[in-house]
Image (cartoon, rainbow, N blue to C red; front, side):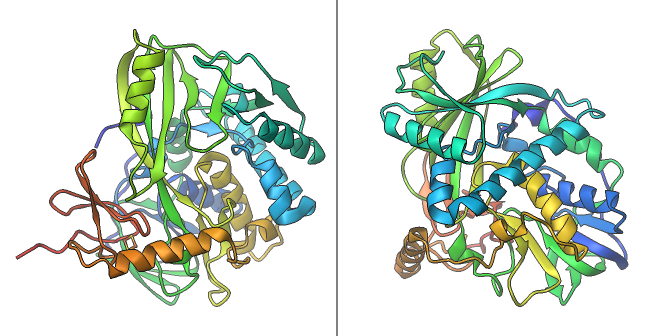
Length: 435
Ligand code: FES
Protein backbone atom coordinates (compact mmCIF):
# COMPACT_ATOMS: atom_id res chain seq x y z
CA UNK A 1 0.00 0.00 0.00
CA UNK A 2 1.38 3.39 -0.95
CA UNK A 3 2.05 6.15 1.57
CA UNK A 4 0.39 9.54 1.39
CA UNK A 5 2.52 12.68 1.59
CA UNK A 6 1.32 13.06 5.20
CA UNK A 7 2.49 9.58 6.15
CA UNK A 8 5.81 10.05 4.37
CA UNK A 9 6.57 13.31 6.17
CA UNK A 10 5.50 12.69 9.76
CA UNK A 11 6.49 10.29 12.50
CA UNK A 12 3.60 9.70 14.86
CA UNK A 13 4.19 8.97 18.57
CA UNK A 14 4.12 5.29 19.50
CA UNK A 15 2.08 3.71 22.29
CA UNK A 16 2.15 0.35 24.07
CA UNK A 17 -0.13 -2.62 23.59
CA UNK A 18 -2.61 -3.25 26.43
CA UNK A 19 -1.36 -6.16 28.57
CA UNK A 20 -3.62 -6.06 31.64
CA UNK A 21 -7.20 -5.45 32.72
CA UNK A 22 -8.00 -1.76 33.21
CA UNK A 23 -10.91 0.53 34.05
CA UNK A 24 -11.84 3.91 32.62
CA UNK A 25 -14.81 6.28 32.38
CA UNK A 26 -14.83 6.39 28.58
CA UNK A 27 -13.32 3.99 26.07
CA UNK A 28 -12.82 5.25 22.53
CA UNK A 29 -12.35 2.45 20.00
CA UNK A 30 -10.43 3.52 16.89
CA UNK A 31 -7.37 5.75 16.55
CA UNK A 32 -8.18 7.75 13.42
CA UNK A 33 -9.06 11.42 13.41
CA UNK A 34 -12.51 10.90 14.97
CA UNK A 35 -11.20 8.72 17.78
CA UNK A 36 -8.25 10.96 18.60
CA UNK A 37 -10.40 14.10 18.62
CA UNK A 38 -13.06 12.42 20.80
CA UNK A 39 -10.42 11.26 23.28
CA UNK A 40 -8.78 14.69 23.24
CA UNK A 41 -12.04 16.61 23.83
CA UNK A 42 -13.13 14.26 26.60
CA UNK A 43 -9.75 14.27 28.33
CA UNK A 44 -9.65 18.06 28.18
CA UNK A 45 -13.16 18.15 29.67
CA UNK A 46 -11.85 16.17 32.64
CA UNK A 47 -13.05 12.66 31.75
CA UNK A 48 -10.87 9.63 32.36
CA UNK A 49 -10.53 8.35 28.80
CA UNK A 50 -8.70 5.48 27.09
CA UNK A 51 -8.25 5.06 23.33
CA UNK A 52 -7.73 1.56 21.90
CA UNK A 53 -6.42 1.24 18.36
CA UNK A 54 -6.19 -2.10 16.55
CA UNK A 55 -2.98 -1.20 14.71
CA UNK A 56 -1.18 2.19 14.65
CA UNK A 57 -2.76 5.61 15.07
CA UNK A 58 -4.02 7.12 11.80
CA UNK A 59 -3.19 3.91 9.92
CA UNK A 60 -6.53 3.86 8.07
CA UNK A 61 -8.32 6.50 6.02
CA UNK A 62 -7.11 9.40 8.19
CA UNK A 63 -3.64 9.10 6.70
CA UNK A 64 -5.11 9.12 3.19
CA UNK A 65 -7.16 12.32 3.41
CA UNK A 66 -6.66 15.43 1.28
CA UNK A 67 -7.05 17.43 4.53
CA UNK A 68 -9.42 20.17 3.49
CA UNK A 69 -10.98 21.84 6.52
CA UNK A 70 -14.09 23.42 5.09
CA UNK A 71 -17.74 23.80 5.94
CA UNK A 72 -18.46 23.60 2.21
CA UNK A 73 -19.27 19.92 1.79
CA UNK A 74 -19.71 19.90 -1.98
CA UNK A 75 -23.07 21.19 -3.21
CA UNK A 76 -24.65 20.53 0.17
CA UNK A 77 -26.74 23.50 1.26
CA UNK A 78 -29.63 23.25 -1.21
CA UNK A 79 -29.94 19.50 -0.59
CA UNK A 80 -29.87 19.97 3.18
CA UNK A 81 -32.60 22.58 3.00
CA UNK A 82 -34.86 20.37 0.93
CA UNK A 83 -34.26 17.23 3.02
CA UNK A 84 -34.13 18.64 6.54
CA UNK A 85 -35.64 22.14 6.46
CA UNK A 86 -34.04 25.43 7.41
CA UNK A 87 -33.63 24.91 11.13
CA UNK A 88 -31.62 21.70 10.83
CA UNK A 89 -29.68 22.96 7.82
CA UNK A 90 -28.61 25.97 9.87
CA UNK A 91 -27.55 23.70 12.72
CA UNK A 92 -25.51 21.53 10.36
CA UNK A 93 -23.69 24.57 9.03
CA UNK A 94 -23.21 25.95 12.54
CA UNK A 95 -21.75 22.63 13.77
CA UNK A 96 -19.19 22.65 10.98
CA UNK A 97 -18.37 26.30 11.54
CA UNK A 98 -17.77 25.51 15.21
CA UNK A 99 -15.47 22.68 14.08
CA UNK A 100 -13.49 25.03 11.81
CA UNK A 101 -13.16 27.54 14.65
CA UNK A 102 -11.94 24.78 16.98
CA UNK A 103 -9.23 23.79 14.48
CA UNK A 104 -8.09 27.40 14.30
CA UNK A 105 -7.99 27.63 18.08
CA UNK A 106 -6.10 24.37 18.58
CA UNK A 107 -3.68 25.04 15.75
CA UNK A 108 -2.42 28.19 17.44
CA UNK A 109 -0.25 25.96 19.58
CA UNK A 110 0.37 23.07 17.17
CA UNK A 111 2.89 23.29 14.34
CA UNK A 112 0.81 21.69 11.59
CA UNK A 113 0.95 24.22 8.74
CA UNK A 114 -2.65 25.37 9.10
CA UNK A 115 -3.29 27.96 6.39
CA UNK A 116 -6.42 29.89 5.53
CA UNK A 117 -7.69 29.12 2.04
CA UNK A 118 -10.92 29.67 0.14
CA UNK A 119 -13.05 26.73 -0.87
CA UNK A 120 -14.81 26.50 -4.25
CA UNK A 121 -17.29 24.00 -5.64
CA UNK A 122 -17.45 24.14 -9.42
CA UNK A 123 -19.67 22.66 -12.07
CA UNK A 124 -18.80 21.73 -15.64
CA UNK A 125 -22.27 22.27 -17.10
CA UNK A 126 -24.91 22.87 -14.43
CA UNK A 127 -24.84 26.57 -13.72
CA UNK A 128 -28.40 26.22 -12.36
CA UNK A 129 -27.02 24.04 -9.53
CA UNK A 130 -24.47 26.69 -8.61
CA UNK A 131 -27.18 29.38 -8.55
CA UNK A 132 -29.40 27.17 -6.41
CA UNK A 133 -26.56 26.47 -3.99
CA UNK A 134 -25.68 30.13 -3.76
CA UNK A 135 -29.27 31.00 -2.86
CA UNK A 136 -29.40 28.23 -0.26
CA UNK A 137 -26.10 29.25 1.35
CA UNK A 138 -27.22 32.86 1.57
CA UNK A 139 -30.52 31.77 3.08
CA UNK A 140 -28.50 29.96 5.75
CA UNK A 141 -26.46 33.07 6.47
CA UNK A 142 -23.23 32.12 4.70
CA UNK A 143 -21.34 34.75 2.72
CA UNK A 144 -21.08 32.79 -0.49
CA UNK A 145 -19.94 34.22 -3.84
CA UNK A 146 -20.50 33.20 -7.41
CA UNK A 147 -17.22 33.01 -9.34
CA UNK A 148 -16.35 32.56 -13.00
CA UNK A 149 -13.11 32.18 -14.87
CA UNK A 150 -11.52 29.66 -12.52
CA UNK A 151 -7.78 28.95 -12.78
CA UNK A 152 -8.52 25.31 -13.65
CA UNK A 153 -7.20 23.67 -16.83
CA UNK A 154 -10.67 23.26 -18.36
CA UNK A 155 -13.79 25.35 -18.86
CA UNK A 156 -16.40 25.38 -16.10
CA UNK A 157 -19.87 26.86 -15.83
CA UNK A 158 -18.95 28.67 -12.62
CA UNK A 159 -18.43 27.97 -8.95
CA UNK A 160 -19.61 28.97 -5.52
CA UNK A 161 -16.89 30.21 -3.18
CA UNK A 162 -16.67 30.34 0.61
CA UNK A 163 -13.81 32.43 1.88
CA UNK A 164 -11.41 31.70 4.71
CA UNK A 165 -11.61 27.95 5.10
CA UNK A 166 -8.38 26.03 5.81
CA UNK A 167 -5.90 23.27 5.00
CA UNK A 168 -3.22 21.68 7.17
CA UNK A 169 -0.95 18.69 7.74
CA UNK A 170 -3.39 16.33 9.47
CA UNK A 171 -0.89 13.88 10.97
CA UNK A 172 1.30 16.57 12.51
CA UNK A 173 -1.81 17.97 14.15
CA UNK A 174 -3.15 14.63 15.39
CA UNK A 175 0.26 13.39 16.52
CA UNK A 176 0.64 16.46 18.73
CA UNK A 177 -2.81 16.02 20.24
CA UNK A 178 -2.37 12.29 20.83
CA UNK A 179 0.91 12.69 22.71
CA UNK A 180 -0.79 13.39 26.05
CA UNK A 181 -3.63 10.91 25.70
CA UNK A 182 -3.93 7.44 27.25
CA UNK A 183 -3.57 5.33 24.13
CA UNK A 184 -3.04 1.63 23.49
CA UNK A 185 -1.93 0.63 20.00
CA UNK A 186 -1.91 -2.92 18.55
CA UNK A 187 -4.96 -3.52 20.74
CA UNK A 188 -7.89 -4.69 18.63
CA UNK A 189 -11.20 -4.91 20.45
CA UNK A 190 -12.49 -8.40 19.65
CA UNK A 191 -15.94 -8.01 21.21
CA UNK A 192 -17.98 -6.05 23.70
CA UNK A 193 -19.48 -7.60 26.84
CA UNK A 194 -21.85 -4.92 28.06
CA UNK A 195 -19.59 -1.89 28.50
CA UNK A 196 -16.41 -3.97 28.74
CA UNK A 197 -14.18 -4.44 25.72
CA UNK A 198 -12.28 -7.69 25.29
CA UNK A 199 -8.85 -7.36 23.67
CA UNK A 200 -6.17 -10.00 23.09
CA UNK A 201 -4.21 -9.31 26.31
CA UNK A 202 -6.61 -7.42 28.58
CA UNK A 203 -10.12 -6.25 29.27
CA UNK A 204 -11.16 -2.59 29.35
CA UNK A 205 -14.12 -1.91 31.66
CA UNK A 206 -15.74 1.43 30.88
CA UNK A 207 -18.87 3.34 31.77
CA UNK A 208 -19.32 4.60 28.21
CA UNK A 209 -17.90 3.50 24.86
CA UNK A 210 -17.47 5.41 21.61
CA UNK A 211 -17.10 3.40 18.40
CA UNK A 212 -14.92 5.49 16.09
CA UNK A 213 -13.81 2.63 13.87
CA UNK A 214 -14.67 4.21 10.50
CA UNK A 215 -17.35 1.61 9.65
CA UNK A 216 -19.09 0.56 12.93
CA UNK A 217 -18.14 -2.99 13.84
CA UNK A 218 -21.26 -4.12 15.77
CA UNK A 219 -23.95 -5.46 13.43
CA UNK A 220 -26.41 -6.32 16.21
CA UNK A 221 -27.50 -2.72 16.76
CA UNK A 222 -28.10 0.34 14.62
CA UNK A 223 -28.42 -1.35 11.18
CA UNK A 224 -25.26 0.35 9.89
CA UNK A 225 -24.95 -2.42 7.30
CA UNK A 226 -28.06 -0.86 5.69
CA UNK A 227 -27.30 2.77 6.50
CA UNK A 228 -23.78 2.95 5.05
CA UNK A 229 -21.81 2.04 1.98
CA UNK A 230 -18.21 2.93 1.12
CA UNK A 231 -16.88 5.00 -1.74
CA UNK A 232 -13.32 4.74 -2.97
CA UNK A 233 -11.35 7.70 -4.34
CA UNK A 234 -7.79 8.39 -5.45
CA UNK A 235 -5.13 11.09 -5.21
CA UNK A 236 -2.09 11.92 -7.34
CA UNK A 237 0.54 14.27 -5.87
CA UNK A 238 2.09 16.28 -8.74
CA UNK A 239 5.12 18.56 -8.73
CA UNK A 240 5.35 21.23 -11.39
CA UNK A 241 1.59 21.19 -12.02
CA UNK A 242 -0.14 24.35 -10.82
CA UNK A 243 -0.34 26.74 -7.89
CA UNK A 244 -4.01 27.46 -7.28
CA UNK A 245 -5.57 30.23 -5.24
CA UNK A 246 -8.12 27.99 -3.50
CA UNK A 247 -9.29 24.43 -2.93
CA UNK A 248 -11.57 23.23 -5.75
CA UNK A 249 -13.96 20.31 -5.91
CA UNK A 250 -16.43 19.23 -8.60
CA UNK A 251 -20.00 19.49 -7.33
CA UNK A 252 -21.07 16.33 -9.17
CA UNK A 253 -19.19 14.15 -6.67
CA UNK A 254 -17.53 12.17 -9.46
CA UNK A 255 -15.21 14.80 -10.98
CA UNK A 256 -11.81 16.15 -10.01
CA UNK A 257 -10.61 17.98 -6.90
CA UNK A 258 -7.57 20.25 -6.57
CA UNK A 259 -5.64 21.46 -3.56
CA UNK A 260 -2.04 22.59 -3.14
CA UNK A 261 0.34 21.57 -0.38
CA UNK A 262 3.47 23.65 -0.79
CA UNK A 263 4.61 23.23 -4.39
CA UNK A 264 2.68 19.97 -4.79
CA UNK A 265 -0.77 19.76 -6.35
CA UNK A 266 -3.08 17.10 -4.93
CA UNK A 267 -5.29 15.98 -7.80
CA UNK A 268 -8.19 13.91 -6.48
CA UNK A 269 -11.00 12.00 -8.13
CA UNK A 270 -11.93 8.68 -9.77
CA UNK A 271 -14.58 8.04 -7.08
CA UNK A 272 -16.73 4.92 -7.28
CA UNK A 273 -18.60 2.68 -4.91
CA UNK A 274 -16.16 0.12 -3.50
CA UNK A 275 -16.57 -3.21 -5.26
CA UNK A 276 -18.30 -1.61 -8.26
CA UNK A 277 -16.78 -0.64 -11.60
CA UNK A 278 -16.04 2.94 -12.68
CA UNK A 279 -13.59 5.66 -11.74
CA UNK A 280 -10.17 4.52 -10.55
CA UNK A 281 -6.57 5.54 -11.08
CA UNK A 282 -6.88 5.84 -14.82
CA UNK A 283 -9.20 8.85 -14.45
CA UNK A 284 -6.47 10.74 -12.62
CA UNK A 285 -3.67 9.43 -14.83
CA UNK A 286 -5.49 10.64 -17.93
CA UNK A 287 -6.26 14.02 -16.32
CA UNK A 288 -2.63 14.46 -15.28
CA UNK A 289 -1.38 13.59 -18.80
CA UNK A 290 -3.90 15.92 -20.41
CA UNK A 291 -3.75 18.95 -18.12
CA UNK A 292 -0.26 18.80 -16.60
CA UNK A 293 1.92 16.93 -19.12
CA UNK A 294 5.16 18.32 -17.66
CA UNK A 295 4.33 17.57 -14.03
CA UNK A 296 6.12 14.85 -12.08
CA UNK A 297 4.22 12.41 -9.94
CA UNK A 298 5.65 12.41 -6.40
CA UNK A 299 3.02 10.33 -4.67
CA UNK A 300 -0.26 8.49 -5.02
CA UNK A 301 -2.71 6.99 -2.59
CA UNK A 302 -6.33 5.90 -2.27
CA UNK A 303 -8.92 6.24 0.46
CA UNK A 304 -12.42 5.07 1.07
CA UNK A 305 -15.16 6.86 2.88
CA UNK A 306 -18.36 5.84 4.62
CA UNK A 307 -21.42 7.35 2.96
CA UNK A 308 -24.68 7.80 4.89
CA UNK A 309 -28.18 7.54 3.46
CA UNK A 310 -28.82 11.29 3.46
CA UNK A 311 -25.38 12.90 3.25
CA UNK A 312 -25.21 13.72 6.97
CA UNK A 313 -22.93 11.81 9.37
CA UNK A 314 -24.20 9.53 12.13
CA UNK A 315 -23.00 10.99 15.43
CA UNK A 316 -24.62 10.09 18.74
CA UNK A 317 -26.09 7.00 20.43
CA UNK A 318 -25.18 3.88 18.47
CA UNK A 319 -28.87 2.89 18.59
CA UNK A 320 -31.94 3.60 20.71
CA UNK A 321 -31.23 0.43 22.72
CA UNK A 322 -27.62 1.19 23.61
CA UNK A 323 -27.59 4.06 26.16
CA UNK A 324 -23.88 3.71 26.91
CA UNK A 325 -22.59 3.10 23.40
CA UNK A 326 -21.95 5.96 20.95
CA UNK A 327 -20.79 6.22 17.36
CA UNK A 328 -19.24 8.63 14.86
CA UNK A 329 -19.31 7.55 11.22
CA UNK A 330 -20.62 8.35 7.72
CA UNK A 331 -18.55 11.49 7.19
CA UNK A 332 -19.34 11.41 3.47
CA UNK A 333 -15.78 12.42 2.37
CA UNK A 334 -15.75 15.48 4.64
CA UNK A 335 -13.90 13.91 7.53
CA UNK A 336 -11.97 16.90 8.85
CA UNK A 337 -14.83 19.12 10.02
CA UNK A 338 -17.16 16.15 10.56
CA UNK A 339 -14.69 14.47 12.95
CA UNK A 340 -14.26 17.66 14.97
CA UNK A 341 -18.03 18.20 15.08
CA UNK A 342 -18.39 14.57 16.21
CA UNK A 343 -15.84 15.04 18.99
CA UNK A 344 -17.62 18.12 20.33
CA UNK A 345 -21.08 16.51 20.15
CA UNK A 346 -19.95 13.24 21.74
CA UNK A 347 -17.93 15.00 24.44
CA UNK A 348 -21.23 16.49 25.62
CA UNK A 349 -23.52 13.50 25.10
CA UNK A 350 -21.15 11.08 26.82
CA UNK A 351 -21.04 13.40 29.83
CA UNK A 352 -24.84 13.65 29.92
CA UNK A 353 -24.92 17.24 28.66
CA UNK A 354 -27.07 18.83 25.99
CA UNK A 355 -25.44 19.67 22.68
CA UNK A 356 -27.16 22.08 20.29
CA UNK A 357 -26.17 20.09 17.19
CA UNK A 358 -26.92 16.56 18.38
CA UNK A 359 -30.39 16.31 16.81
CA UNK A 360 -29.07 16.91 13.28
CA UNK A 361 -26.63 14.01 13.46
CA UNK A 362 -28.77 11.53 15.43
CA UNK A 363 -28.08 8.00 14.11
CA UNK A 364 -31.71 7.11 14.94
CA UNK A 365 -33.18 9.55 12.41
CA UNK A 366 -35.31 8.20 9.59
CA UNK A 367 -33.78 5.66 7.24
CA UNK A 368 -36.46 6.22 4.60
CA UNK A 369 -34.22 7.62 1.88
CA UNK A 370 -33.80 6.41 -1.71
CA UNK A 371 -30.25 5.21 -0.94
CA UNK A 372 -31.69 2.63 1.46
CA UNK A 373 -33.33 0.78 -1.44
CA UNK A 374 -30.05 0.93 -3.41
CA UNK A 375 -28.07 -0.49 -0.49
CA UNK A 376 -30.66 -3.19 0.26
CA UNK A 377 -31.05 -4.31 -3.35
CA UNK A 378 -27.27 -4.38 -3.88
CA UNK A 379 -26.72 -6.49 -0.76
CA UNK A 380 -29.52 -8.92 -1.71
CA UNK A 381 -28.09 -9.38 -5.22
CA UNK A 382 -24.59 -9.94 -3.87
CA UNK A 383 -25.76 -12.42 -1.22
CA UNK A 384 -27.54 -14.43 -3.92
CA UNK A 385 -24.51 -14.46 -6.22
CA UNK A 386 -23.03 -17.94 -5.79
CA UNK A 387 -19.37 -17.12 -6.51
CA UNK A 388 -16.41 -17.41 -4.12
CA UNK A 389 -14.68 -16.05 -2.13
CA UNK A 390 -17.29 -14.73 0.31
CA UNK A 391 -16.83 -11.73 2.57
CA UNK A 392 -16.43 -12.66 6.25
CA UNK A 393 -18.40 -9.57 7.33
CA UNK A 394 -21.88 -10.67 6.25
CA UNK A 395 -21.28 -13.14 3.44
CA UNK A 396 -21.53 -11.07 0.24
CA UNK A 397 -19.73 -12.25 -2.91
CA UNK A 398 -16.35 -10.53 -3.28
CA UNK A 399 -15.36 -9.00 -6.62
CA UNK A 400 -11.86 -9.21 -8.06
CA UNK A 401 -10.47 -5.72 -8.71
CA UNK A 402 -7.83 -6.15 -11.43
CA UNK A 403 -6.67 -2.52 -11.21
CA UNK A 404 -5.70 -2.73 -7.55
CA UNK A 405 -5.25 -6.53 -7.44
CA UNK A 406 -7.64 -6.83 -4.49
CA UNK A 407 -10.85 -8.62 -3.53
CA UNK A 408 -13.47 -5.93 -2.87
CA UNK A 409 -16.89 -6.27 -1.26
CA UNK A 410 -19.66 -4.32 -3.00
CA UNK A 411 -21.95 -4.47 0.06
CA UNK A 412 -20.05 -2.47 2.69
CA UNK A 413 -16.58 -2.04 1.26
CA UNK A 414 -14.31 -4.58 2.98
CA UNK A 415 -11.17 -5.25 0.92
CA UNK A 416 -8.57 -8.03 0.91
CA UNK A 417 -5.25 -8.71 -0.77
CA UNK A 418 -4.92 -11.33 -3.50
CA UNK A 419 -4.01 -13.85 -0.80
CA UNK A 420 -6.82 -12.86 1.54
CA UNK A 421 -5.26 -10.48 4.10
CA UNK A 422 -7.67 -7.82 5.34
CA UNK A 423 -7.03 -4.31 3.97
CA UNK A 424 -10.21 -2.44 4.91
CA UNK A 425 -13.14 -3.23 7.21
CA UNK A 426 -15.86 -3.59 8.35
CA UNK A 427 -14.70 -7.25 8.14
CA UNK A 428 -12.55 -7.90 11.19
CA UNK A 429 -10.24 -10.59 9.87
CA UNK A 430 -8.60 -12.23 6.85
CA UNK A 431 -10.36 -14.49 4.38
CA UNK A 432 -10.35 -18.14 5.44
CA UNK A 433 -7.57 -20.11 3.75
CA UNK A 434 -8.79 -22.13 0.81
CA UNK A 435 -8.14 -25.88 0.97
FE1 FES B 1 -20.21 -6.40 4.60
FE2 FES B 1 -18.64 -7.55 2.86
S1 FES B 1 -20.54 -8.25 3.57
S2 FES B 1 -18.28 -5.74 3.89
